[in-house]
Amino acid sequence: MPPLVASLAVVLAGGALLWQATDGFASLTTESARRLAALTETPAVPAFPVETMTGERLLLPPRDRKATVVEFIYTNCPTICQVAGAEMARLRDRLAAGPFAGRARLVSLSFDPARDTQAQMAEYGHWHGADGKVWTVARPEANDLPALLGAYGVTVIPDRAGGFVHNAALHIISPDGRLTAILDMDDLDGAEKAIGRALR
Image (cartoon, rainbow, N blue to C red; front, top):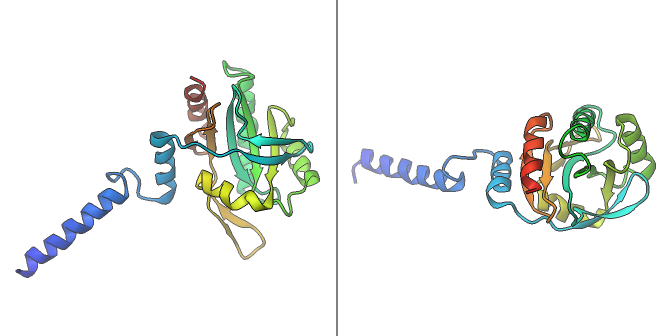
């Protein structure tokens, strides 16, 4: 086989593999792939028991008539998680003033349950204005954490400063427990639309 033909065959084979691996070039990163999967596959999310900032136990996501918005945080994060808290407060206020008032709950879920005690979660919640009802801060059982992160497709990597690098996003869950959208945390218009779709 001439070298040019062989090279072309390799390029075409590689392109075909890339096409398949990226859903027709729709997603070129793992983050965009998980967001695309939420939109196209709406995978069911298993319910995990969590402890809230008020000491209550609940299943997340609950199977009721509300949509649930989940973000992943750790409370001693000095940067992105503080921004995430501010954005959740903005989303809470928008939902309270719109057609989805009382039809959605917000959960800031810690992936650092060993350090994020109930008192620590309550302090983070108080600082950002979480009331423990419409918006709460919660933590899973440590044994459930790997499966929970896997169910949402969240990656958490310890850094060298005692913190973590992780996905920062809003995860929209329908009342029947399906992950229907993953959005940037400041995409509040998109979050409202996704909540509306999840409630249909």
